[in-house]
Image (cartoon, rainbow, N blue to C red; front, side):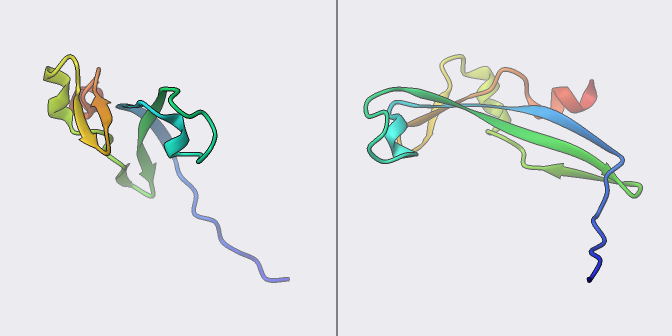
Length: 91
């Protein structure tokens, strides 16, 4: 049997990358949840591995933090940011 060396991480920090609000759940599951709104978490992750830092995904654009109602970012999906990634990294 062949052994696979899995990459290990030293630490994983989940970050809040914002929220994506879509007006129709069926866009993600055709035929299910038509005309039912859905909120999707846009998680980002800061990873410490082998003396390196990796930022996996950066979520929704940080400048939406200053637009309280968010902004349509794609296909009638509204992006909203309550805590910019930069703020979370500083913390």
